[in-house]
Structures are given as structure tokens and as C-alpha cells.
Image 1 (cartoon, rainbow, N blue to C red):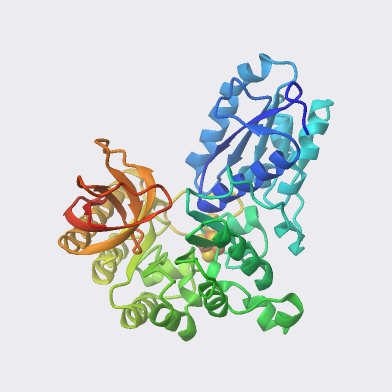
Image 2 (cartoon, helix red, strand yellow; image 1 turned 90 degrees about the horizontal axis):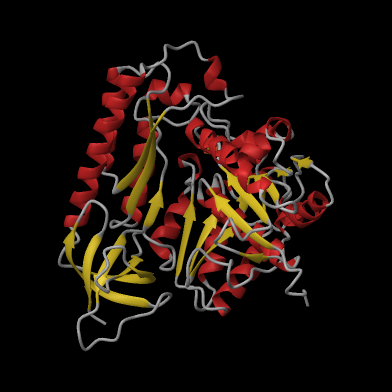
Length: 460
Ligand code: SF4
């Protein structure tokens, strides 16, 4: 038992994708098992960790401003420890210790398990950086989750199935910050999902940088049996058989790895949600070639069509980049056309951000002027908003099932949750019905639509 007077408090700030959010849950668990307790207040904390994102330059600059502001925090307590984790840590390593003398330790994406040891070394005055890469599956063996840090929200949880990426898209820093592709044994994933279901989790999201590439290297090298990895579609079928697990999602797949069986899973397995986040990035064949995406616009359209044929109501969302070097106005028009044609239900869109060490920096293509990139982004976002609103309006009058997350930001006693299509639903519970709790399912009737959410009334 830890003496309360000696108990250390940690405060964790997380930037970036679901992978980082889940890594922060793992860091929290590791610290909890080492006797630390979490605090929402930086002022109360003995240990402050920033889990960083480097996918765009803006996210990285945000870290540097944050670190600048934390000089005072560090100076206010002799025993305070400041650490940097995540993708910028992996990318910059010990140069962060040189540039920011008030940072005590730096640990990369393959070194989460050392967090407690590094924190205690820092308390003794040792400043260290651990950013070595490992191709060992040991890094998946982390302590069981604590209920306070174990899930995205009540009733939902992330489960890592693979890490790293071997695709080397020319704009992307992830292969540098997350390392080579490695898949976790199927038995360990199933055991984790069973434990989550037994603890009341109803929905899991499988995580991986190219999640549907799960197991591919082991199969290709003839190591699948030895490593205990099934194919991704077999994994989904195994997980869907777990009693109590009502919903399974996965993110982010690569369009290249949708084989026939994965498409069939969407038709045949009810627990797999009717939603796929399918990153397109660009609708121009020449830009896709320069991006090294390894598919063309027709290949992408074929995958989307196959998914719709298998599951006609499936919601397809996407990621898009505008202003990639050499992107002409005609290339951008190709993107708009394909976005309209596929009728994405939603999408994240960004301006291209040059990242260190990526092959796009060596492309002999003219840069798109910032004003033009901004105009393209605004036009694309306006199209995406109109597609979302159209898809949402088409749902008015229908019923759907919501996994309740908690109070809605709209206030007035409304609740919020997500439906199987991953749409945000804000809903009221009419008098006479008891309001569901976070983690419950509620059946609701959609009565209105905005570009951000469905508005609904609970019916049971
Ligand atoms: S598939 Fe491409 S965009 Fe996705 S993580 Fe790998 S390199 Fe990055």
C-alpha cells in the first residue's frame, strides 16, 4: 500500500490521434501500478507528461509553446518532474533535453513501459531519453487496465491490434515515429476483449496505423502460426463471437488491404459496425502516385462500391490533404469530384504540412501557395459539410441505437452518444421514460439534423 503522504500525483496532456489517446491510457495504467495517482490539475502534479503528436508542423509547434510555458511550473517545485512522450519524443529524442533544460526525461512510442523507472530516475536527478525501436511483441504486454483509465468512455474501449507502418506514404512521418509494422497475437487480443466485455464494455475500437494490414507480414513470411496471428477478417469474426460485445469498430484501415473476406465481414457479421473510415487523401491519380498511396481513384471507388454492395447502408468517412506539392487546380477538381461521387458521410481535411525525413520533401514539384491551399481547404470543407448535412437529413424520421456517453454539450438535460454509423446523436428523454446512463444503449428517433450531429428523442 502506498503511503498517502508520499503518493506522487501525475498530470498527463495528450495531443493527436486515438493511438496517442490509448497510449496515454497505457501510461496512466503503468504509473498507477507504480503507486502514482492521476490529477486534472497541473499545479497539484509532481509529474507532468506531455504525450505529443507530430503529424503536422502545427501540432509540434504547439508542444514547444507548451514547454516554454512550463518553465515556471517546473521552477515552482524542487521535486517536480517534466517529461515528453509520443511522436515528437520519438522524432527528436535527446535533442529535446538539450533544447529544453527543464525537461527531465523523454520516452518514445516503443518505450512506454519504462515510464515509472524513468520518472524515479529523474527524481534522483538523472535526465534520460529512451527512443530505441523494438520489433518485439513484448511492448504489447502492459499491465491490466485500471477502470479509471481503461476506456475511451464508459462502455467503450480501445484495443491495440498492431503498431507501426511499412507503407511510407511520401507525406507521412508515422513510419519514423511509430516504427515497423508489428501485429499482436490474436489470443492476447481476444483475451483482452473478453475481459473488457466481462467488465461491461459494449463497444471496442481496434487500433492500428494500418489496422487492416493486421497479420499480413506474418502470413506472407509463413510465421502466422508461430506468431499466433490470424488475418484481420478472421480476427473480427473471433471478436464478434464474444458474448456481450455488441459493437466492433476499427481505425484506420488502408484502402489497399480490403480483401474480399473483409468486405464480406461487413455483410455477414452484425457486431461489426456499418462504418468505415477510409482515408482517400486525394482524388487525383497523379497526386496519389506522388503521395505513394499505391492505389488510384478507380481502385478507391471499387473498394467503396464493394463495401456498399456488401452493406448498402454503410457510412464511409475519410481523410483528405489539399495543397500537396504539384497539386494543380485540375487535380483539386478531381478530388472534389470523387468526394461528391463517393458521397462521404464526413471527412477530416488538412493542408499539406512538410514533415522532416519524409520523401515528399525530395519531390521536384512546385509548392502550392499558402493562400491557394487555404482556398482549396475551405472549398473542400464546405463540400464535406454539405455532404454530412445531406446524410444527416436523410436519417430524420428513422430510429437508431445510441451507446450513451453522457451529458450533451447542448445542455438542457440532453444526452449524447454515438450510433452504429459513428454519428454523434444528441437526444432528450421524454417524461415517463427513465433516462439511460452512460454505457447504456438507448433507442432514439431522429427528429432533426445539423452538420455536426443528429437530434433525437428517446423512444425506449
Ligand atoms: S499508411 Fe501512409 S498515411 Fe497511413 S500511417 Fe502509414 S505512411 Fe502514414
